[in-house]
Length: 37
Image 1 (spheres, rainbow, N blue to C red):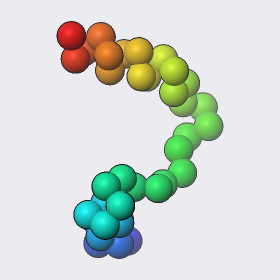
Image 2: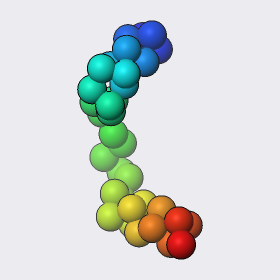
Image 3: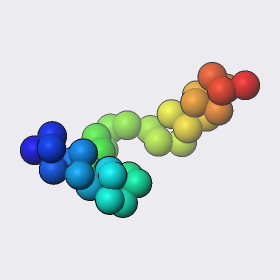
Image 4: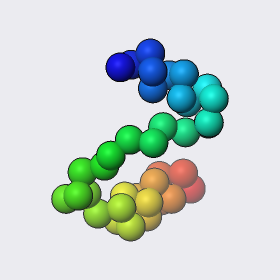
């Protein structure tokens, strides 16, 4: 499975994988923005 995801990453530039529904994407994006700056 890991090899398939690696091939997908190289081919598409991203991995289309399911995410945890409990994860607050907006909060995580804001956290990454703050870490970057």
